[in-house]
Image (cartoon, rainbow, N blue to C red; front, side, top):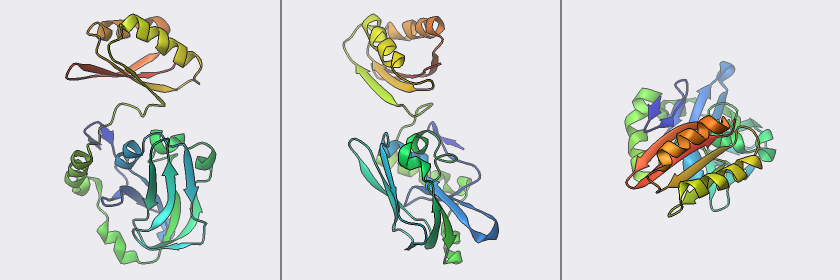
Length: 219
């Protein structure tokens, strides 16, 4: 399901208040993760911490936390539960929380202790209107992919911007994503030409007022 360019998994249930999703598994267990709203609000996650497996957590209390250069947030449990396991690889490589929150970026596996609380969660279509309202309230906007780097190049000619973009990508691993913002009216054509010349992918172009937003992925 896509809402305002933000992706939401079709096979999950949603807790609107905590910005988390739940997948129910065989045996009554559940997998929990953060939604796209949480991922874009949090910004680039640089560190992750978890409560220990075996810990009992009440609905609305923390399963762990995420932190970035300018932001700290608690991942709150959508269900009263016992933590069975956590996604330990995120401690060393937190990137999936931003780039793949519904799959590789899952947060914890839980044993629900109050099964009736599942009725408080909503399937995608039932949650859609509330998710839209939450996005508007929090001013969340999503792009084609979550950026690893951001470049704000206001008042700079695109030719100079492209030199800086090449330098940034040359020192970045394959698959790195850059969000570039420019006010140069010629940049739209120049970005297309640059993409064809370098082989790097121009995933999205978006105009907002006099600003042009580009999402670029290193080939």
